[in-house]
Amino acid sequence: MSQSKLVLVTGATGFIGRYIVRYFSKQGWSVVGLAKTSPENAPIADLQAYHCLDLPSTELNNLLDKYHPDLFIHCAGRASVGLSITTPREDFNANTALTFEVLNSLRTSAPNCRFIFLSSAAVYGNPNSIPINEDKVLSPISPYGFHKWQSENLVLEFARVYGLLSASIRIFSAYGPGLRRQVIWDICQKALTEKAVNLQGTGTESRDFIHAIDIAKAIEIVAESAQMQGEVYNLGSGRETTIKELAALVIDALEYDIQPQFNGNIRLGDPLNWQADISKIQTLGFEPSVPLEKGVKNFVNWCKAELHII
Image (cartoon, rainbow, N blue to C red; front, side):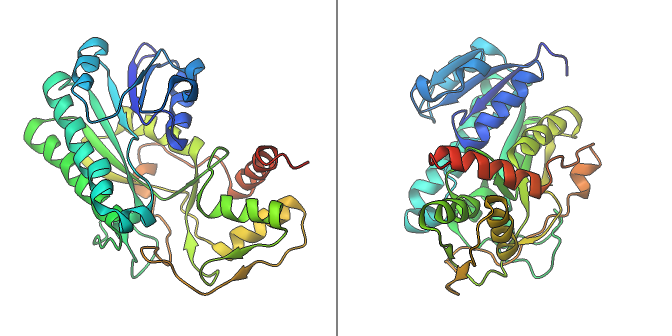
């Protein structure tokens, strides 16, 4: 794709959305951002335009008619397993129903636009073996996982029935400066503010951590090189890391002498072990570029500044 291409990004003010906006802007794309937060929270410097829009909205069709985007990256939606369990209707509306409305708007107003849906490894649930490839039988254990799976099927539906050029990317455990939730933030802020790290689980639970910079890079590679027939791609580092190992990396980067403690309780909806088989996306040319050790050090430095700790 040439540098004159235009990409429209929903959820542009979210954690991953901001990285995507910044990366695509640096690659020479014209970037239009959509989100429901006020403009002062948007990465304005990296955007050609920003629209405060609470999706779903008929205004999306007007924007598609105005900009004629070459690529549409759908980052908007809820990303909380816990909230999906306590308020499943809201999660369904913000994920599955919203994805349908976006796809339907593209069908009618921008049928030649490429579409990338950000899905989640939550669709796999608790796999019986790792690493997990895209052919693994899906078995979500949370409404969030089910709603991401349903959204993937909508992407496939619009590809097969309407010919919409599209793909879904199953992101494993995203992290990076700017993330103010999930386990890496939990470990870091507890170590900094409490000088103690008390965590859920046993510490043997594992994840596959992928830096948000690599997520943005992978999305561009998929947009440029994938078949775009509604298929799915895993996106992780291909490396399994236990939470105990992650805590040690964070504490070492802080140069603290803390022994993390685990309460042994597994939260409802949380999988036990994840590791991505990323060979499919590697065939398109993607390789992770941020080693976890380096990424953790950068995150720790950001977290210290965020919490005003010298």
